[in-house]
Length: 182
Image: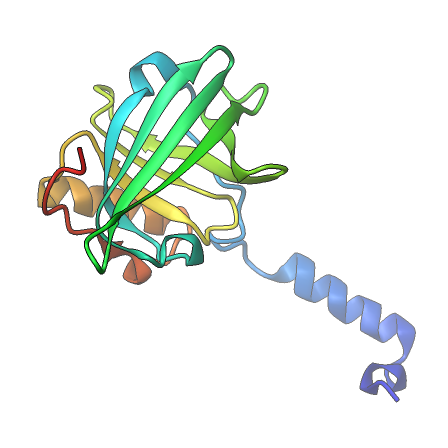
C-alpha cells in the first residue's frame, strides 16, 4: 500500500500546491535565457573547447577538443574532433538546425538522426571570439574560444555567468589544448 494513500486527498493536494507555488525559483529552475541574436556567418568556423561539463558522449576525449561549424543553406554542418588517451583523433559529424524565432541563438543538433540535442548560445562576446553554450536542462555546457587558450579573467567571467544561469560551476572541467589536430 502506498504511504500517500493514508493522507487525505485534499491535504495532499494542498501540500503539493504549497510546495510547488511557495518554493522560491532557483536559477536552475528558471527558464534559460539566450543571447538575443547570433549571426551564423560570423559564428561559423573553428572553435576550441576551453572548459565543459563532462558528459558521456565526450568521455573518450582527453585533450584538443575542437568544433567546426559551416553554413549549408538553412542548416549548419558540425564537425567535432578531439584527441583520445591513445593519441588518436576521434571525430563526429552532425547537423544543426535553428529553432524558429530564436534569433539563431537556439539550435537543435543531431549527430545520430533522428535524435537531437539542444545547443543554446548563452553568452557571446561582440567580436565572436568567446562563447558559453549549453542546454536548458543545464546538464551540458561548454566554454569555447577562437584560440586554443583563453585569458583567465575571461574564462572566470564565463564560468561565473554559467553559475548565474544555474549550471554547476564547480563541475566544469578544463580542456587541455596541447597541439593542433590538423
